[in-house]
Image 1: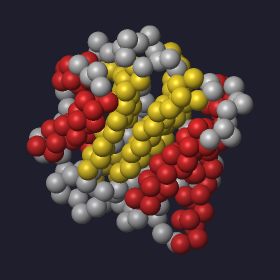
Image 2: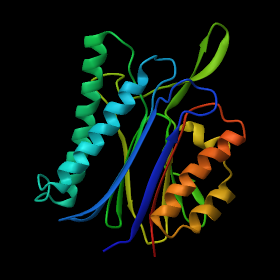
Image 3: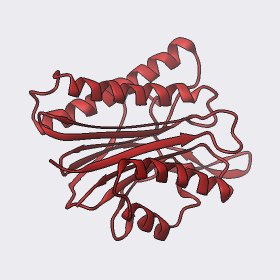
Amino acid sequence: MERIISGCATDKGMVRVKNQDCIVCHTAKIAQGKLTVACVCDGIGSFVYSEIAAQMITEGVSLWFQSAQDNRLQALSREELVEDFDATLQELNQLVCERRKRERIDLGCTMSALMMINRNYYIFHVGDSRIYLVGETVRQITRDEVVMSEAYGVIKPRLANYMGKGESLWINRLSGVLSGGEAFLLGSDGLFRMLEEREICEKIGRLSTERQVRRLCLEMIRTVEDRGERDNISCGIVKMKK
């Protein structure tokens, strides 16, 4: 059985009144092998209640993971399990859209989700939160879905895609196989602006226990806060030990 260590943490940061981020990370043994699911969501700052969307998505991912443990999905093949997870994300997007219309409030969030079944990994991505693959180097494997737009004479980036934007959702997907020793680093955009690739490699490379993973997630958050980050910050790490 593959040795997976994982953990996550989130913080509202030094400036923001509330935390619009949500992050979850789960690992368990199921019939198909060692299953790991992690998901980070970042509420859209200009939407007053966007933390509701982030919470809805991450809670839905956690419920799906629980169902995978409780035998409902045990008979599925690996490929069928991946497609069921994708369908769940589509349903969660629809729930956000329905709540936005019903309550007439602005709702929306990014979503970067990782599923691993043994050494096989699957990425599901919407927006500009990020997932990095960390080994001897650090490589961003998600793409920031932003466009530049002008408002009142100022050119600013804005999200081109997010959960809750519309009932028809495009989820960017990619997959691969780990050889062992690599790690995934998940985070909202507040995490990455102040971290250097060298320190990411060094610190994640030394991890050997889940306690160390959780401690490093908190340490990374404190580091970027000390360096002046003003946004909410979420950090998750999933590492496959050699």
